[in-house]
Image (cartoon, rainbow over all chains, first blue to last red; front, top):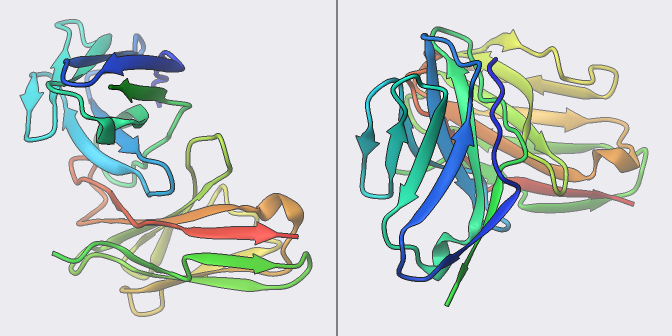
Length: 111
Length: 115
């Protein structure tokens, strides 16, 4: 599976947009980019995923560069409840392909 | 829609004792996963089921860990005998199918402390 690189931690201001980067320079054409987050003492929560195009849902937006070697998760208006560890994961297409978690980015939203 | 249910939420046992965790996936989900998450690390896959068959158990320490999904719905993960290094959160997850286009949903986890 392609490896991802994320900053270990970042701070964000409440009410501002939070932009979380992820590098996946070895990604291949048949691999999705998935984002999950894990709030303290809870299981990982699905946020969004994409293959080539930018994606948006009620939680976040996912911007994937044209060469697909990096992506950015955008939380449009960060709240204190968005404080969590955010995982960027590359997952191959096809059957039997699991999620392989790295270390993630520990995001702290400050008032 | 009900999520992935797990029990017990918390368990403390002594080393060399046994423990079992139960998981009920989201209704209709054919694929079920068990992950282990040690404090400060990301979750690591232990075993993946497709219906009642094992797809991947390459990371399962089979000398002490076992898992089953007899009727293709709920699943049990057992540890016997437990070691101190088994202290972790055990996460169950499920998805509609094996395809990577199917989102994987996680339960709240079962916290195990081995003393």
